[in-house]
Image (cartoon, rainbow, N blue to C red; front, side):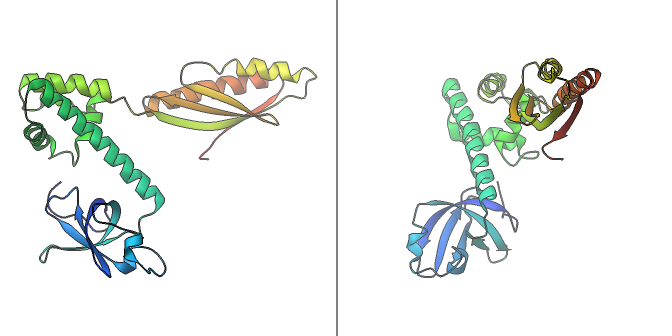
Amino acid sequence: MYGFPEESEIVICTVSNVQYNSVFANLDEYPGKSGIIHISEISPGRIRNIRDYVKEGKKVICKVLRVNEERGHIDLSLRRVNESQKRNKNDEMKKEMMAEKIVEFAAKDLKLKFEDLYKTIFAEVSNEYDHLYPCFEDHVIENFDIKKLKLDKNILDKLDELIKQRIKPPEVSISGSFTLVSYDPDGVSKIKEALKNVHGEGIEIKYYGAGKYGITFKAEDYKECEDMVEKTTTAVIETMQKLGGEASFSRDDD
């Protein structure tokens, strides 16, 4: 990344200096840029000792409050980052570390310097991507062909090999529940007959009780997952109705 962060952006920082009423931190994703966290933005409530919360060298996840590019000032906040934002940022950081590791392995195999190879690759993709991992992931799901980059063929072949070895396609998941009812004396067998339509890789079903069955569908892309949901739920409901019972399906997000 280059330049300045945007206001409200969530950033990873390294604490560089802790003072009585403020903290200075370097922005890891913006080389050469640092910001300040006022004591009031460390944590809600009264703070007796700021060092109970931050120490030099510690990694922290902050929210950008204000940016003054002319003066080079960046105001940050620790307390305004919620748990979901922390998890998302940590996940993003772990993925980027994986991408860096891929470049590191490529550099080692090709007998190149990691820093030089990283800069070369990033310069080629930086017009479309802010980070390497999303680019590598798009290559795996065929939304981007890394072999079209203007790089040496040996580098491209090695990257293609390592990316496909280490990054798996993201998985789409849809979950919901069936409600199956039969008033027949042999209703249990009729429900079992309807549930025979639930089969195949990527489908899991659990019995919740009182005629409720939780079901989860997983696939590599949204269309495939939706097709699985449509095919399975239609078959279960139609079979149950033909057997004189009642059936319905509800998604968890409905």
